[in-house]
Amino acid sequence: MSSGAMIQLDQVNKWYGQFHVLRNVNLSVEKGQKVVVCGPSGSGKSTMIRCINRLEEHQQGRIVVNGIELTSDVKNVDAIRREVGMVFQHFNLFPHLTVLENLTLAPIWVRKTPKAEAEAIARHYLERVRIPEQADKYPGQLSGGQQQRVAIARALCMKPQIMLFDEPTSALDPEMVKEVLDTMVSLANEGMTMICVTHEMGFAKAVADFVVFMDKGEVVEQAAPTEFFGNPRSDRTKLFLSQILAH
Image 1 (cartoon, rainbow, N blue to C red):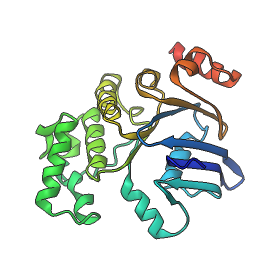
Image 2 (cartoon, rainbow, N blue to C red; image 1 turned 180 degrees about the horizontal axis):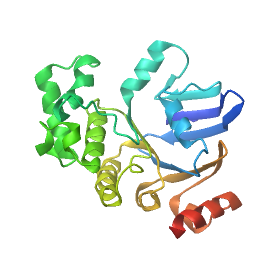
Image 3 (cartoon, rainbow, N blue to C red; image 1 turned 45 degrees about the horizontal axis):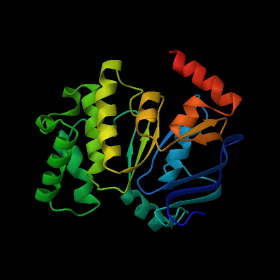
């Protein structure tokens, strides 16, 4: 195992009943690296990143995050979740809370941050995702792109070491995708360690240190973007790229 890695997956396997969803997955992500994970639907991409903060449980192999191994030990899981922010496809905001209340809830309850300080941090990150004027609105009053930027700000309020994105733009209308990707690009440029499951190949080309292609639960190929797009080695990768880049 790499000693400097922030995230290390070593021979990770997972089953849902008889279905073998992750097959001997190996992945090593250094501090500050940006990794894009792509592949056809059902290839295990989302399951893999959900295993990294124990939203899903792996059955074989090792996952080590920021020096802590993920086991069934609840203390370890809690310690990792404090360092790992997650942004989902659907925004998962609380509809009955204002944007500001959505952002301050976890810092106040989990990190025991005083309310005034939590609100100051929340307003800082709303500025950061360029929607400071939405603080007192409810999620239902915002566009999809704005809600996803609130979800990113909410994750950042916990000051995570690592951000995981699970298809953060796939539920958005096309005109809203760019505003969310722009937010993610600026985060990447600040040196945040990131793993992003996405079909946005332009984003992969712009920010990824390396691209991971998964199919049928396996990591088929991983390479720097120039190599991945310019000279893919696997026939499965070539087929996937020809289909996705044709759209």
